Image 1 (cartoon, helix red, strand yellow):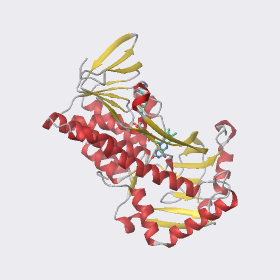
Image 2 (tube, protein in one colour):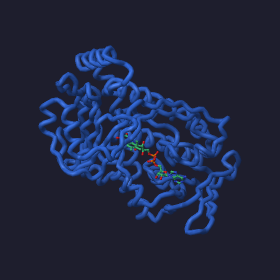
Image 3 (cartoon, rainbow, N blue to C red):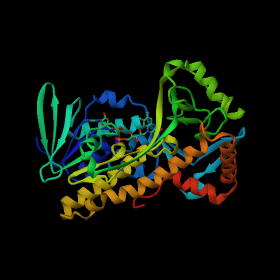
Image 4 (spheres, protein in one colour):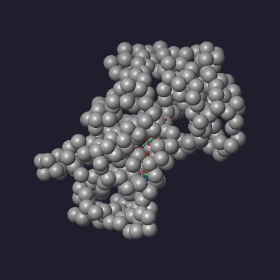
Length: 391
Ligand SMILES: Cc1cc2nc3c(=O)[nH]c(=O)nc-3n(C[C@H](O)[C@H](O)[C@H](O)COP(=O)(O)OP(=O)(O)OC[C@H]3O[C@@H](n4cnc5c(N)ncnc54)[C@H](O)[C@@H]3O)c2cc1C
């Protein structure tokens, strides 16, 4: 089999790249190790920046997003038992859209199927070869048979544990990592959200987040110990702990119900540099991870593939390699800004085991300053709603 771009991974990065390339008349095949149902069952992000919505528009996949996505003009910060709203729209003129990663993935998969584009699901033993020369290949096994996909370029969209980054010689790559001393215990439930917008709560028992996927589906998180086990948490225990960490007016509005998903995610900051190795490009979680506090993971995956699609388009249309050469630098400039914001927002809102009472006093002083200063609120809002492409 031969294609112009072989994409490894059918998460949001791989699927969006496939859709953007198709719109530009560039042929791509996606090779994914899991089944489509498995990919769709992963409950992850839910907040989309305007840039991400713009890229989905470019890909022609926004009909359902515009009908069902919830525009949010702000968010609320809770500390000292009080709520403070940060008005994104007033401070930046921008908003975010709440629309689950699962729905983004479903829309992109449906569009791919309708256009008759090739996706190989349940590919085993996926490996990448020859990306330091002119003839890269992706090899895999499917239904017991060996396959070779020859291509001009490989896009490594296979997430943090994928094979593409691991295939780069150690001497060619530098990684930066911070592992946080806690995780997030998350619950998804078919109950209406407690508030119209997201609530980020700093509490002495630990961080809590009231998030949502729709008007009838809520996603809540509480900070938990790294070695905590999800089996230790009954739904009732979760709801009790969540309410303890929220101001009374929010706690009383929390509608409870049986969980449809419950999981613990560790928090990590990670960046691999560079993001291009000859004819292999890394994009999304394959190249970087942010703690989910700033809602940046999915949005960074989208902006990476936005730059990559543009670069590949210029290569095939104009025979220019300038944007390909600039890919890694352009992405990393944006990535490090998002890393900084996600680290800062995590540091401000979570309970750290080693910073003690002084650390908590500093968090409260900073939160007080943040909600009391229009300039400081604007900085938070600008980072949260995200930068336009090109920054
Ligand atoms: C538990 C969890 C919760 C999260 N919550 C949030 C959140 O609230 N907000 C936020 O902004 N972000 C969140 N994120 C991050 C966000 O979901 C990711 O940034 C986003 O999924 C990145 O998309 P991606 O396509 O780069 O990678 P992925 O979504 O990881 O997709 C990679 C794909 O590659 C496939 N793959 C892996 N290895 C191979 C291989 N060897 N061969 C072929 N295919 C392979 C995988 O099966 C997968 O389908 C969360 C992440 C996790 C893990």
